[in-house]
Length: 358
Image 1 (spheres, rainbow, N blue to C red):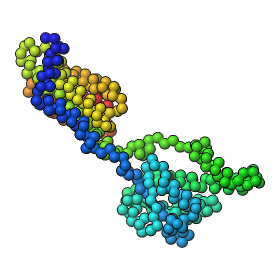
Image 2: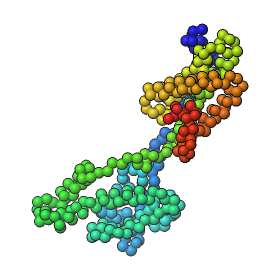
Image 3: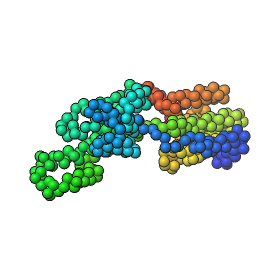
């Protein structure tokens, strides 16, 4: 019998089979329902909260309208800083609220900023100026510190630069006759912001590794699709055992067609899921299609070897659930055990679903 013609008839037979027809409908419906069920709302605030409070020389909290001009500039940077920052800052005017927020863990940490901070720093006092209250659960206090230091630098660099030019530079006698203080500060600010002095480029920032709820929900889906394709191949192998009882069907080409036909349909439906479920595709649909085709070939070779080695249908019935369950456990469908157990880095390649997820 012509293998191509046999493949056509086998595909038509599968499409008309009720159980397979349910599967044909279920996967596209899944592709349409998951985007609706999984929320992709990015408006949720996922930043790490930190607090600050401004105190006077007697360590008494100040109201915002009592802040000095330079302190107002600092709080403005903290309150309305980089929108892509991992941290958000909230100002307080009650020390008890600050302590309660830190103790409960609602705040990663809190900063007690003196109102004369900039005067003391310009005078050369640089140590132990800002007490920090830290949550017992804090693990990112050092990173928050760097954000606060950067905000202080933004406010202080201009005045310090101006002090240097006025008091210790060769241009001291020319200020303000040659250039005014306002022009100096404007020039300094423009160079500070355009990156011509120095700048930082961050890679692998904490936010880059943040795990969203969407990622958690969708992460095992590709692995489940890979196991489903393998399962369809096993059903094709079992169908071959039934057909092979008749001598005319006990041929190599028939076995290939019987195993391959259900995998083609499942792979097609898996590809539709990858296309229509946001976040499931790596971005290049052509490469996703190539990966599916290569994975089908690997599954076909594996099942051809299994059906060659195992002659009895009852043994396949026993082997199939054990192997598929092992794929779910030992290949990186839900978790990559190779990250924790060195032995699993090699053992996972015994399970063919790992080849699609690599």
